[in-house]
Image (cartoon, rainbow over all chains, first blue to last red; front, side):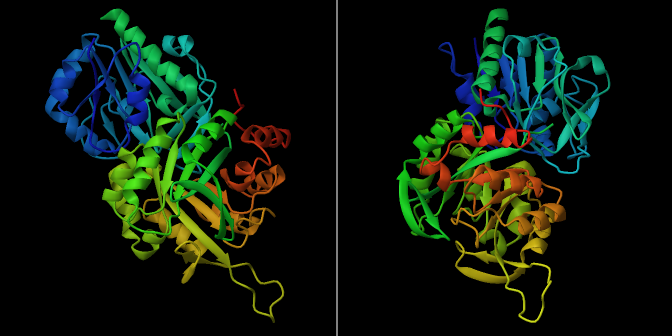
Length: 200
Length: 261
């Protein structure tokens, strides 16, 4: 199985790559979104800003969208998850639009929503296979999908519900950083790799 | 609800974790990656790696230590010290840091905060502020406390008001404030609660209280004063307590913390 991690050229991918390195598999960093779309499994990491990342994805947007619609397993973390939607208040540029909806700035007394929070109302098989007691969040924007049925987990802060996970077919997005969420988070990433390997 | 964070701080000089009193009198406490891994296992919510090397130009060595430390962790790591540009920050992130904190460099050139925030996001940009209490005038009895910003490891006073500077840091893009009381640092007599209260009510980003932790009650006080997280160092390094013990005591105070697995 080939496993490609998109490199937007901003931020730290170490922990994610380390978590993805399992069962003799070596993830490949990919800067070309067209090549990314050809991998057996895809990871969109969660570092950087929406506008810049959307711009980097743009040359391969159609190919990537086709691959995800075709059922290629894909894990999208934080910003990566936000890129699944149509657009974001964070910046210009087009998301993949795999999930209809937009990304809004959080309306909390303190933004970013930063730290360890509980993930609840879980309807995500991977979170049932590899549960996290707490997940590490670090974000100022959050997904607002048009169809609530894609939401597979939420978290709560200050009485507000924040979308914590979405899924459509084999594409899974999480707002938290599993690779930063301790050993349970690393297990979650590895469960994704195993699930992907099983369906290739 | 977000749990309150207990963050272990490693002050690193020339490859070793040190801890001093009031920014001086450094004592060797061990190797960064070993302490970081120990604190993660104890339930630390994040690790801060502060490079306080007296000798400038050792940045490549520091990055190598950050790489080693990051490779032992599956919780967030912040690097502070020696970051003066977007390129420095990019190197720190490539070495495995998740956030960068800037202190003197931001006071010298506040645009740096905006540059970091635009490139890496506010969640990655920590403004570290060292604040020193201004003694009240002798003839005024109930004057409201004031603090000035000090830089260069607490050695150089500036004319900036610390609360106003915190506001400006956030306006310029900082997503978090690491707030150290120079007066309390290393004393283990508690955080400067007035300072924590003043800054956390002035900004709408998370505030990390730093300087003065000596027992779990101090942590609880800082969190009750409005801090979102507490930084601890000395009392962990010398084995007085563990993160797990601190969290158990915070939970007993009714403070929401991430339970240690």
